[in-house]
Length: 449
Image (spheres, one colour):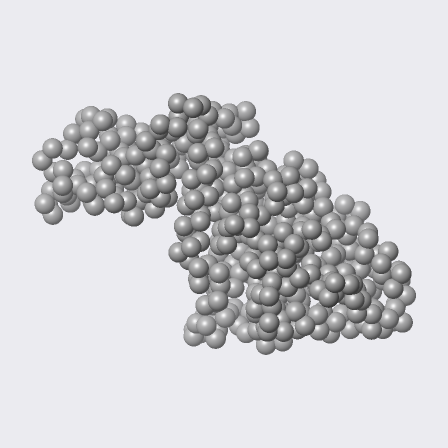
């Protein structure tokens, strides 16, 4: 036990943070996909040119946070780990249960492994922690307090870690000290039980996970690769998948961790606060890092309205901080959460004034963002931001004509920037080559009127 205590105090290569509420049907596959990252690394050829002190995975900590788990999921995870590592004597597994107020070491499997191989090559320590308060944000903050590595990878208990994910992100973070968060692509899937279809795919690591069904791929979530452009798009929607990220613990601690008052969009709020300091601190790598399971118990499914509301509020706070650079700006009519909502989802706009104010807000956001980040944006990223603005203006103008145009058919002042349809004139000025689209909209408006 003394040796185990010494190992527990060491800083591992990576800490994997997993909050667990319920998911007994999925957790075995999830934890197996994490353990297999070490198994795969162990069996890499010794002459592999990519191997080295800065590119290897020799130790891992898995922090499992018990967020009021009452279905036995955590016990299933531990048993799955032990069973999987029975045939891997070169990997030492230690399990520390902190939930009873004292550390309990599950050492039966450890002693068995030491008899097979007294000098393990890779060590895995699992720490089981009880969350201080209900909710994902509290569970994540509690888990972060127990993460011993500076590099922390996030995982959800119902997702599957893609082969090579952790070592790829480790290598990147070790070689890019200015980056605080790195994400990846995600494959969104549903199991065959949830969606009856013949178009099925075999899941990663299916051979080591009991009851792992075939799956139906819903879509692939492709992140924004350019960090400057990603920072811009985050003002409108969360463009980075939470379970795919690896981040620096010190950077999260610096912004005081997850906001526990936010129940459904805690990750989005966290990224927006981080990007306030540095627009290039978050980026995504172009490879699949996680297979993300969609099912009826997903937080995004059960709390979709609350998640959308909290996301809009997080956007509002971030946009206000970027635009309110002087006291005079506080009178800006476009800085209203209703107009921010209309900008994010123009179809929900309730009036032409809301559309126009959303367009004015967008212009303010573009100029402020480019001005504040002019020293760190590439020419390519600036062009991407401008093109994105043009597309958003076109969408706003289209909604303005199709949804509210009939009310202004007789007195649309298309040549006036302050007329009833300011956004239309803005679209005309910024995108002169899209006159055919505008003509089609006007023809449709005249015909329906």
